[in-house]
Image 1 (cartoon, one colour):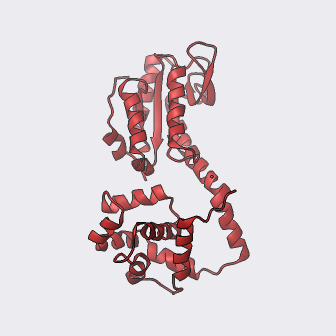
Image 2: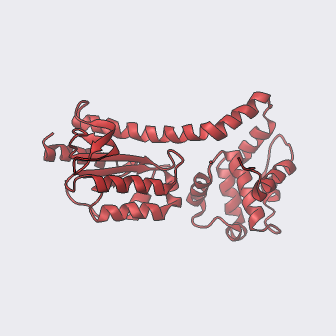
Length: 285
């Protein structure tokens, strides 16, 4: 397999779309805005303008209004920021909203905010709806992250099976390290965890809710444990990486010095499959 020197821009261009009281000052401000929101059969831009009140708001009140918007859209902060930047470019503060208010409110409307507001406000509420929302905010958040991670793993496993067959790899295993006295976790070890010539790790952004520094730690442990001549492929994705570019840049740095053979996203499926077939020939698997 030929050597690559990847760039941060290349990967960004290929990204596809925790008992103290939780009611801090920000939460109180958000709740106040929700309580003041009028109940209407439908909403217009004028309602959004009143929610933000750009002429008199400050940074804290503006951020509270953004949180109200995210609640209606059911998006995390990173997901919302990435979606808005796709529409507005860099900057998502008061200054941007004031200078480009038409584009700002247009972006919110383009994400279906007005319809989501009307549906949420006018939906009949039963006691079980409240409990379902509690479930969603707690366990559901973790399940959503796990689903993202497993979906990306399944995507990669399909390509691995195509290239090597069903009995030529170990999945979600502990591979034997270079010294033969210790091991480390990896998603795929080819042809076997006892002596892998190829290792593949899959990291969907925010898949488990853990910090991105944990992702870097996982990758570093694999790099440290494997033999130097073992090919190490990393597959990752999620547009919210765009909000953590400094961490993604560290992974690119590891690739540039040869500690990671190559980094892939779902949009790079063809390149990944081609490289897997080439590695199969090189390793005689």
